[in-house]
Amino acid sequence: MRRHGLLLILVATFALSGCLVPPPISARGGDAARSASATEQAPGAGKSPSAPPEAREQTPEGAVAFTRHWWDVVNHVRASADAQPLRDLTDSGCRVCAMFLEYAVAASFDPLASEGPWLPLQAAKAEPLDPAGTTVVHTEHLEGPAQVYVNGEVVGERESEILRLAFHLRFADGQWVLDEIFPG
Image 1 (cartoon, rainbow, N blue to C red):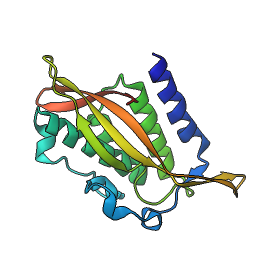
Image 2: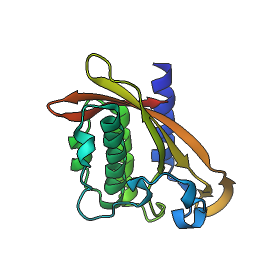
Image 3: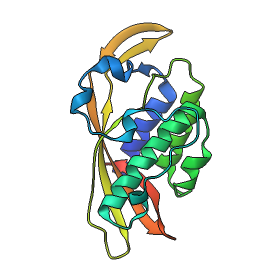
Image 4: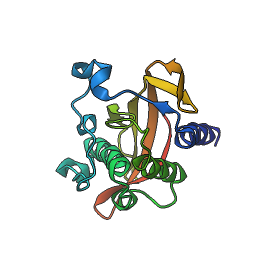
């Protein structure tokens, strides 16, 4: 429970403060070293991104593909405020997922929200599936760099960091469903 509380505080800080504004991805440099995930490009306000076929496979690779797709949909919501595609992929009991959803919708209306994807997914690796057909996908996301604003004025800078998350997934009715997100 302590680990869940820490992530709730972390996510709430980002969602509620609205004061960390990273520069556009193109200004950060180092793109060649990043993974070739679709999360490198924000999906935009158009149609929600489609899941790749492997995201429907009950394998560790399928779980990773689903997690990458889920993150692409987070960024779609952030660009469009269309929350339904993310709700369709997420268990309604996932409180941290709901916080990510609320942040993404709010950011879609925030003129200070950064361009490009939020917390770009850099790497993902799944644990082997357990007998119940569940797994945990461990991810690394680039956080920052960022300028810190107070009352519209830059008051500081933050260096880039790697944020590690873990996504608990279950396979039900022929598809992955996200049950919970916790520090990973």
